[in-house]
Amino acid sequence: QVQLVESGGGLVQPGGSLRLSCAASGSIFSIYAMGWYRQAPGKQRELVAAITSGGSTNYADLVKGRFTISRDNAKNTVYLQMNSLKPEDTAVYYCNVRGRKDLLANFESWGQGTQVTVSS
Image 1 (cartoon, rainbow, N blue to C red):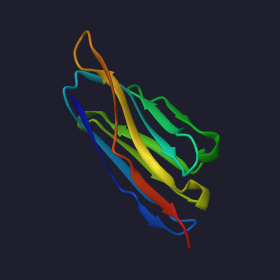
Image 2 (cartoon, rainbow, N blue to C red):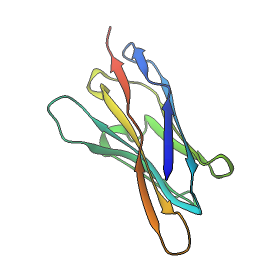
Image 3 (cartoon, rainbow, N blue to C red):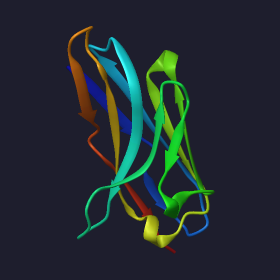
């Protein structure tokens, strides 16, 4: 079983910054993708950013130029640096990790979610 522990959410004023972290632990053979999703009230969960083991990144259009995803492979940890935050960024942010538990079994795990609120 793979566990994810998220941290870094909170309340910030518009234009401010936050950094989210997500550490994966447990039965991990390899990780090939880590990402962040978010879900605002009344809306579907959407991809914010993702990064592969090789460092390739993908961002939602709404966050390009403001958010940066990075990972520390040695620590099985993914980060999301969020700058120039807007009220519409308010949501619960979820970490997602996909990989292999061993040579035969894949896994996909979700974090518990961390609230990000952008408000004056």
